[in-house]
Length: 265
Picture (tube, one colour):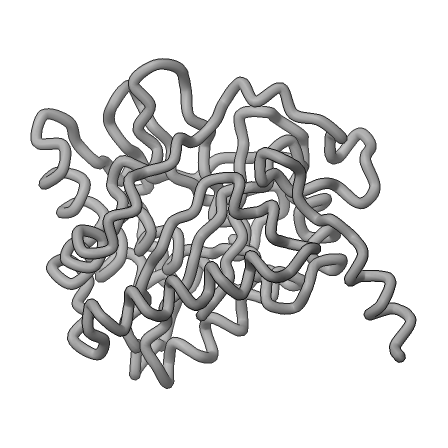
């Protein structure tokens, strides 16, 4: 028996709220979160999620029945894994990534396809509010996969197939560096979320960062590298509106910041 695998199988990676437990708590990741800024669980209506993604991103390569079956199967697999099953105690967001046959540039795909889809879905769901992309310069040639994030798994697969998965915004009170270093402790199926999967999750659940009473966190696209140390892209609520922008994180820890994990079906 592989001793490392046996040891890992007895670890619990997530707490009772579904938050990632830091392997090495310290100044770059807090052992406990005050849960002051939280994301509330959007309604898990598979049909509505599917229809939004179909209307605004396109999902002709997969049926609603296939989507439902893949999500249910994935949840059941996670439930049977004692090391990661607690992640289901937190927020769970199903998404679909349509196959991208000619993916040439992550930034171009985001600004031409995914961010416009977020805007259309959000504005349809919240006609009295708005989505604004505050990053006015082009994203072309700006974004790459963050080393250590495992996000290359998503980028490689989406060029050959339509992907179905679950997004878990479960990494709070971590610095960016600590987020990346903690990924290496996790089972291989867990991937740090980048741009496409976060966008698709918001397209399907446009109220993901809406919180009527209290404040949601800022949601980083931590699986992506910007080429500038200490700087990242994110979604953020502004009142009841939604925004996309870039800002420095300087590898600091903030209870206001959140990153996400992905589990693909």
